[in-house]
Structures are given as structure tokens and as C-alpha cells.
Image 1: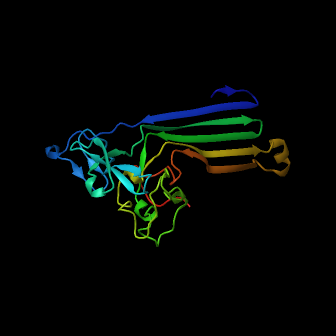
Image 2: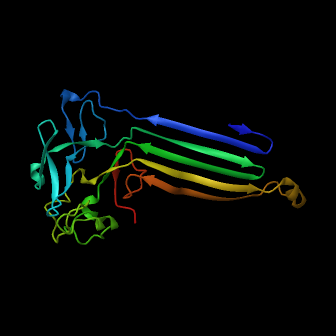
Length: 242
């Protein structure tokens, strides 16, 4: 409690949690691979293992991936053929830290409370990106508004490759193109209420009447606007927000 008087009260809450998980030991020290993850000693459990996206070639709108060496380090070269782009570590799903903070203020019969939550350092993988960001390869799926930021003429600096009937050089194959930075701050809950004075209620033999309005997930600030930032711990998410 920060302040407490006869008519006014103000209390606050705050918590923060750091995340530092890593795999300590594997049988025979051998890496374990899946279609999107690697389990490796010294790395976080939910570490993404994907070809590394190098963006769109501004000259022709083609997709590009980084060429990596045997240790998974970028060589400085890029390729338009995903078959030449070996998989490498593409970050981890776990945030570096997350938490919440809130306040509760009361003045006479009025009460205002709000709660924010946040996370910094986490990543998400848009698992259905091969459908929604297919660049013309799967025309039966709806085109999300994010694809307005696509290459259309030489010199364009775009987020997405040129859209071509039948696809654009395997641009929709799983890669770090579909890995999203997921730092966010969200107004999780806010409510305003008013409790009628007891002097008014006694005549009607009513003990308490409170009128309130409340909103949940009212505002969100996030480094990506593709999906809801609150997802599963492994970072896997499906389909974009409408």
C-alpha cells in the first residue's frame, strides 16, 4: 500500500521473472532434431532450428537465405535456392524476462484498477505461415493484409517476395522468415467501479450495490502485429489475427 487515508487508498503490485533454461546433458552428447527445433547441450529447450531468412532481393523480388558454415555461422553469402541454405539456430522461444505491474486506486465510492503484463526477448514461430505467406503457391488461402508489403517492382525494399502464381522459389518453405520477435506490453485488465453509499441503500434494505465497467486485453504494444503475443511456451502459433 502506497497511500491510505480515510477517503483515498492507493496500492501497487509488481513482479518480474527471468528465464534461463538450458539443456545440461543429452545421451551421447548427440543433438536431437525436429522439423523446427534442435535440442543441444548448452542451448535452451525451445531453440528454433531453421534455414536463416535473408529477406527479399530488391532487384527481382526473389526470396533469399543465408549460407552458413559447418558450425551454423553465417558466411556473409546469400542464396536464392533454399536447398543451399543449411539449417542453423534461429533463436529461442523463451523470453529473457516477463512480468506484470498494476495499481488500485480508491476514492470514496470510486475504484480504479489496472494491470499490465509484459515480456521481452521471446520469439514465436508462425507455423501456418506456409499457408498465409505462400506468395502465390497456395491460392486457395485468404491473403492477409501483411502481404501488402510485398515486392512489386525493381528497387522495392519489401518484407515479402513477389507474389507469383505457383509460388516464388520455395519462399513458403519453413525458415526463419516465419520467426517473429515477440516483445510486448499489454493492458491486460482495467476496471472502474462505483459503490453506492450505505446511507442510500439502508432505506431499501440493500447491503451493497456496485456499478462497474471492465475491459480485458484493452491495449497491446508489440514488436509484431501478426498474432496474439500470448502463446504457448514453445513459441508455436497458428494463423494470423483477422
